[in-house]
Image (cartoon, rainbow, N blue to C red; front, side, top):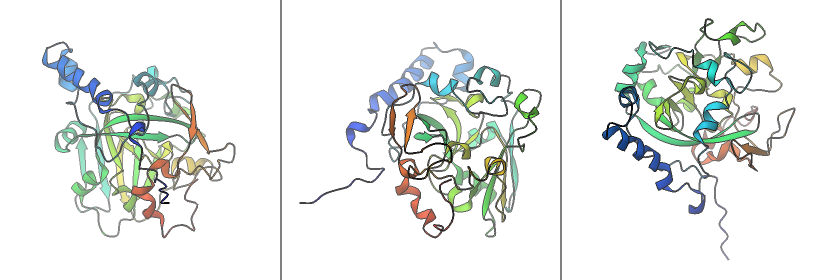
Length: 309
């Protein structure tokens, strides 16, 4: 008898969000705009409806938009989860992001130039916080490798370093001196060029709100959420591994790689299961958050390093 053990990305049809449910909201937005029902600002700023990339089926129902947008980690504003109202003070225009370092063509991009130059697509990704809660949301944006290609990384570049905005007038959390501001994260060049690595500019078919990292953020769904730096202002290519934010604070609890693994516990809690945001249902955690088919090969020669915390 042939026994087939499905891999993490091979999901049964019953586990995938029906296409009609996933797309219905976007079609409704498009129809409202066509009929003039949306406000002028919404018609100008809301991205056109997109079909989610079928290579990345969500495998579970979408998290309710309200839950995903009102339960956030963003320490520049607060260490409380209900910071979304405080984050409204973040000005999203004008906004620029510099891409420099070991590249042939360093550039500074205005956010609207990025939106015009980079073909936008939608990806529904699962996310796993190191705190053991999870969500499934539809991002709008483009693969990170497209932005890197525009600046032509040098062959000697080994790491991509991401820096979040520091705006003390609107970010009260920056006054906490025990954090090593600015928020810095990093990927290896091969992680950054993997097709899963994504630059998000929208969420739920709308421009990315500030509490979720607007106007532009990194999304790496196979890692714990703290690797996905928010509100980016600078990307630097380097030959040196960066001192990243949470590892600098507590290296015994947070590592550079931060790949999801249910079998590697955080020093203070288990990572074997996760709580779905909204329903609070507990479900088993998957290695690499279920994206092992796309990324496990990146670590074949790195197994002597602490890849998972």
